[in-house]
Image (cartoon, rainbow, N blue to C red; front, side):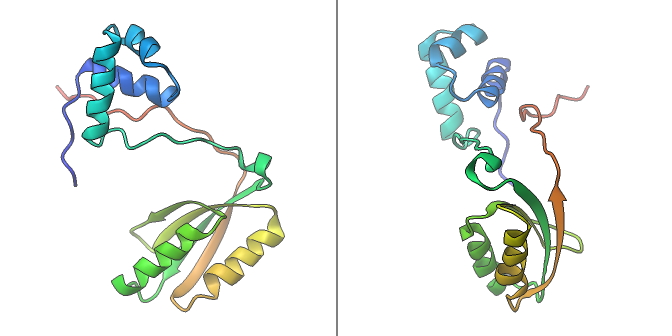
Amino acid sequence: MPDSVALDPVDLEILRLLQNDARTTYRDLAAAVGVAPSTCLDRVSRLRRSGVILGHALRIDPAKVGRPLEALLSVQVRPHRRELIGPFVDRVRALPESRALFHLTGPDDYLVHVAVAGTADLQRLVLDEFTSRREVARVETRLIFQQWTCGPLLPPAPTA
C-alpha cells in the first residue's frame, strides 16, 4: 500500500471542491479556500505530483450514447492463476461495454460493470466475451436499476 500524503485543511477543501466540479478555475478555487491563485496552483500541482490527484474524468450518461442497460457481472475464473489474470484483465478492459473492473476476494474473482444497448447485447456479451473463455468458470449477472454518486473522497477524520 502506498503511504498516505499529509494534507492540511486547505488541501482537503481543494480536493472536496475539485471532486464536486473539476472545471472550477484556479481563481475561483483560490477564493473559496482563502489563498492566492498562485498558491492554489502550487497546491494543486503538488497534489498531482504526489499522486493524490490522479486525473480528471468526463462522466457520460450511458443511455444518451445508446447504452441504457447497465449490469454488474460477477465472474469466477478457474484456475485463478497469475498467467491467466493479465490476459483476462486486458481483454475485459478492451471491451467497449466495460465501465469498470474490480479484482475481488471471496467466491467471485471479478466484478465487471458494463453498459449495453439492451438485453440481447447483454446476452451476447456474457456468452461471447465471458462464458466462451476457457478460464471463466461462472458469470452471474445483476441488472442495475439506478445508481448514485457519493460525496467526495477525503481521508478519514483523525481519531481522538
